[in-house]
Image (tube, rainbow, N blue to C red; front, side, top):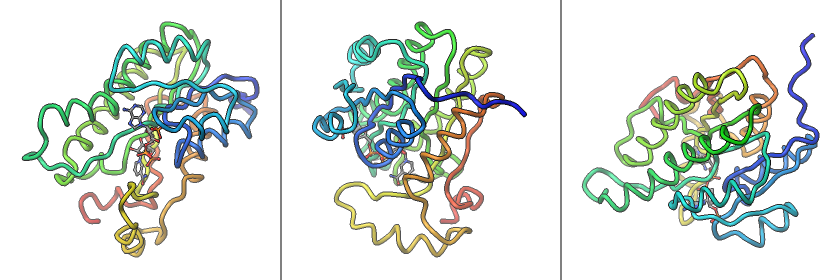
Amino acid sequence: MNKPMELTGKRALVTGGALRIGKAITLALQAAGAEVVVHYRHSEAEARSLSPFSVQADLESMEDCTRLMKEAGSLDILINNASIFTKDTLAPATPERVRQEFNVNLFAPMELTRLFAAQAREGAIVNLLDRRIRANDPTCLPYSISKKGLEELTKLAALELAPGIRVNAVAPGPILPPPGNSGENFRELAGTIPLDLLPTPDHIAEAVLFLLQADYCTGQVIFVDGGQHLLGNGV
Ligand SMILES: NC(=O)c1ccc[n+]([C@@H]2O[C@H](COP(=O)([O-])OP(=O)(O)OC[C@H]3O[C@@H](n4cnc5c(N)ncnc54)[C@H](OP(=O)(O)O)[C@@H]3O)[C@@H](O)[C@H]2O)c1
C-alpha cells in the first residue's frame, strides 16, 4: 500500500485563507498537522486568530505577490484560493475591471506558482476553480474566463513542474453566496443539482487534502459540485 504524502510538519500558504472556503482549508490543513501561513488582504484579525503566521498582500499587485512569497518563508504547499467574483457581462467589463479580476484570479496564482517553483524543489499546489469552467455563463464573463484560464495553468504547470511539484485543482459548485446576496437563489439551485444538496466549505477542504496527499495525481480537476458540471449550462 502506498503511503500518501504526509502533511504533518509541512508548511502551507493559503491565499485568502482567513474566511469562508479558505478558512475551511486552513483549518483542515492544521488538523492534518501542517503549519499554515494565512494570506489576507483585509481580514487581518480573522487571519491572526487562525495562525501565528499571516501575511497581508493585495494580489492585484505582482510586487505584493513577490513580497508575500518572501514573507511566507520556505513552503511545501501552495493553495491558490483568493478570488474576486463579479457579476459582469461584456458591456460593463471595462479594461480596469477585467484587469483586477484577471490579476487576482489568474495572474497572481501564476506568479505565486512561478515563485513557489523557484524556491521549492518538491511540493504540491492546489488551485480553486469553479464548476462554471464546464459551462458558458455570460453573466460573469471575466470571472469565467479567469477560472477557465486557471484550469489551463493547472495542466500546463503540472507538466512543466513534474516530477517534483504536483499541480491540481478543485472546482466547487455554489457554496456560499457573495456578500450582499441573501443566498435565496443558491437554495433554489439545490433542487436542480444531481446530488440534491449544496456543497459545504468542508467538502472543498476534503478534496483539497485528498489532492495534496494523492502523490500520483497531477493536472487533475476534481469537481465538488454534486454533479452540476455534468449539466453544463443546465443549471
Ligand atoms: N463561494 C462559492 O460558492 C464558490 C463557488 C465556486 C468556486 N468558488 C471558488 O472557491 C474559492 C473560495 O471561494 P470564497 O467564496 O470563499 O472566496 P471569497 O470569499 O470571494 O474570497 C476569498 C478571499 O479572497 C481574498 N481576496 C479578494 N480580493 C483580493 C485581493 N485583491 N488581494 C488579495 N486577496 C483578495 C479576500 O481576502 P480578505 O477577506 O482578507 O480581504 C477573500 O476573503 C475562490 O477561488 C472561488 O472562486 C467559490
